[in-house]
Length: 419
Image (cartoon, rainbow, N blue to C red; front, side, top):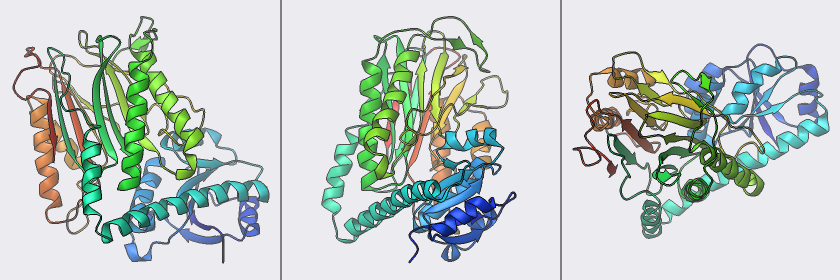
């Protein structure tokens, strides 16, 4: 019986002969599928595989969507991207969290890499099966205790600076969640840190890693120094002035990624995250987006929304990877909308997604507060889902800077809703 099942993406260019020879040498079962089949084909015809092999020229986000669909059906394969000459194209995939292969495609090297991927994929399926067995065996009481413990990791109240409003909606798909958010002060109260993150998979295993990652991020950020780095404006162009809070941000994400990849790589869990540090006095924002859905900055003057770039890979995937800083400016009237993929990927009873277009349509409507924004989005997602099962955790955070400062005790400011 083959040790590894590999889906080869039917896309141009085809895998080089040396790579195919290495796969056959390790007795891998090779299955060819198109990206369209993986994203839109009947679920019952989708293969159960350990590895999805794609050329570097493939669109990283499209591959990511296909893997998410496979995960819901039979466990997610590990994406391995190959390149022969177009090495620059690997950057997008590495940032998303995909593994990669480059020449020489020696059978021993390819076999070792794919064997590691197979173990990670198998472990993910085992955890998913264990989670399902726990539910079938009726561990409702234990899961409820876990939910209560996990709720203790979420902030009971949000530290809202004067002149700002923060609103959050959090709906787990199960009794315990892989999503989480956090809002806390750093740099002796001079900066506001906020995190929205999504641990891969869901259920008990994801909840355990959610607690670990949240604790590592907060502890490191709160206990880092006040060194300075470079600041920038809304579009990312830099200017050399100090940024208080950038060092705790970098330390927190880098240290968390280092700990996870040193100690928990075999578990196969990782998390996408958006970690921002706000200067409440000026509205300047420095952030790291680790493979997360790009948050949307909604200008208060009616201009189109600005998507905040990905600045590094998901945490827990690549040892010793480099995270860069992103920058934005929130002026009076602006709102930053941060969300997990449970929003655009919410499914109705027929299986269709809520979608990015619908989300942007709602955000483009005339809104006067972050609370109105998350309320409207939450209602729309619930209506779209209807009687269908909620497939993924839903988390939304809106950071709003009113035109007329209303302070932290204004109506709607600092609300936390867990449904």
